[in-house]
Amino acid sequence: INLGETRPDVVKLGSGERTQEVDYASGNRGSRVQVYGRVHRERKQKGLCFITLRDGHGFLQCVLAGDLAKSYAMQILTRETSLMIKGEMWEVPPGAHAPDNRELHADYFEIIGEAPGGEDAITNRVQEKGDAQTLLDQRHLLLRGEKASSVMFVRDAVEHAFNVKFHELNYIKVAPPALVQTQVEGGSTLFNVPYYDDKAYLTQSSQLYLETVLPFAGNCYCIEKSFRAEKSLTRRHLSEYTHIEAELDFINFDDLLTHLEDVICGVLEIVLGNPRIAKMLQDLNPDFQMPERPFKRMKYADAIDWLREHDIPNEEGQPHHFGDDIAEAAERRMTDIINRPIFLTHFPAEIKAFYMKKDVEDPRVTESVDCLMPGVGEIVGGSMRMYDYEELIAAYKREGISAEPYYWYTDQRRYGTSEHGGYGLGLERFLAWLCKQHTVRDTCLYPRYMGRCKP
Ligand code: 4AD
Image (cartoon, rainbow, N blue to C red; front, side):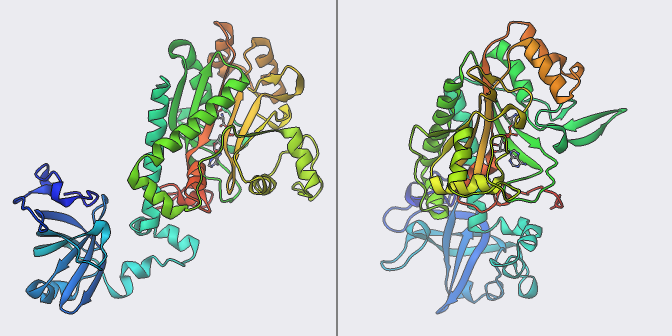
């Protein structure tokens, strides 16, 4: 039996080593089952011992009575002890409460591994109101808690939903390399790694490789780690993050924006269609609402005006001017006030990456988009790509990048170029928004950022 099964009378027992079924019974007294798990909570009351058992699939209340409850093992039982219990499934009595309205009446148990009590008890190692650094040091134990683990379950569901959505759209998934010798998003955030007698970097984005997939496979995507040597400690920057990137061929900028809306909303629908995950999301983020479509579209130049009108200064404390990089704090304030997803578009070429296509109607700006979400700010960065050979060569020059290592990227413009574009979505930021988490450090298994590379 998996503890996540909600109807114990009909659970399919007998498959796999964890589910050695003894016999099906009818009526209120359900099947005999054998379960494995860890003590999530325990309480002793009137000669009974109540254990909330956790096995990753769900929670199950187990009731031990008589000699079992009086046993020494039960007297010293601590949270996180792992054990096996055999018994019979009952509905909980009227007025009583238990997960999924059922309980296991035990007639046998075996302790598999004890857990410390006292000073070293898990509740002392991981205190809900402990300071952030201590909690990160204890993350391996913190993850056993309901909140931290729910975020991991939602994360799994979201990643799965992106795969489903992209395959519905007929996009091929590819696996670009992590060790590279080209930059994508500027030299300042590259991690250098020795590579035999040569030098390499950890990839900042798989975009350039995805562009090379278009001519042989059409629209494509990947879900890979990206690495950024970010030297600032913010609540939305990691050194290693999961980057969901897609590239679309023979499109225009408007197609790109419509596709992004479709993917984001499609993924949310798939995720919310899973009852267990929907319940977790309800607990994590009770105010969550499906974004309204179309998303608000706002040009960078209009955002600058908006920030001036709302007296939100730039990083120097001055009113914003065209050409300013809109800093994280200002961006988040604007997004929080507008309080709905925003496609911020047409950023000036100087503040964006070398490969972005210019807007033919206003060559000061690029066909670029950031998708901003309340509470987090930017979760997606995308653009149309330069598809003209000469323009790309000029862009390398302007940025002081040697064209030589990029020959394979440049060749896309020589061998049958096309109007194309794509984007990257930071999974941890998407989750921070969806699960209403203060920081991306809580939306990955073990966060990496400046100053932390453990556990
Ligand atoms: O805006 P960025 O830098 O865009 C690119 O890398 C493009 N080459 C992607 C593409 O077009 N294929 O990053 C894209 C997204 C950001 O919007 C953000 O969500 C996330 O990646 N991101 C980070 N997430 C966590 N920590 C960091 N240090 C991040 N840097 C970017």
